Amino acid sequence: MSKTKKINKDNIVSFPNNISEGDREVEAIIFAASEPLDIDTIESKISKKINVPKTLEKLKMIYSNRGINLICISNKWSFRTAENLSNLMSQQKTIEKKLSQAAIETLAIIVYHQPVTRSEIEEIRGVAFGTNTLEILMELNWVKPNGRKDVPGKPIQYATTDNFLNHFSLQKLSDLPTIDELGSSGLIDNTNIDSSIFGTGKFYKEKQIQKKENIYSNIDEMLTSTLKSDKQE
Image (cartoon, rainbow, N blue to C red):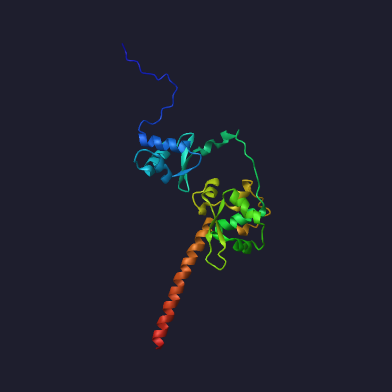
């Protein structure tokens, strides 16, 4: 009598069997969370001492080809619908709310010049703006106060939040969307926005590098002038 193959009659999804109890705890905590979690928060909730970063990378790999993916944005972890399946979420209702030109320009200036004060924002824009402009951005949790500038009057400085990066699915500020990308998403009418206000990640980095190069050039000038003075003496 020939041997018959065992057939699994239960239509059940088989999850990987190499997941430890600690892995399961991390998986459950992230799944149940209402917002992305950082590593410290995850470590504070689990009952076992495990290498959480290693576990997160392991789970990320396991879920990489599934309908939901484990992703990390601004050092915080969460489960998201796989990007190539987003078109299936058509039943989800979205309420669009366009920001004013003043709010978009203010946000762009804060993004590429942060931390920046209110007076500095007005100087860059070339016009004063209403008090509710910053309030709207803070209500969206895209902008927050970020200390005070060490000048007379100690004005409040503003900077972007992790929620700003999370909303636009950004890993870092240099990945910021361009004015065209913001326009295509429906957040702004780019026909009425001065594109010169918007920088790019490349511009932001080059600006920092140029600043460092200027410091070194000043040192070279000082050394040169000192050597000339010694020769004259």
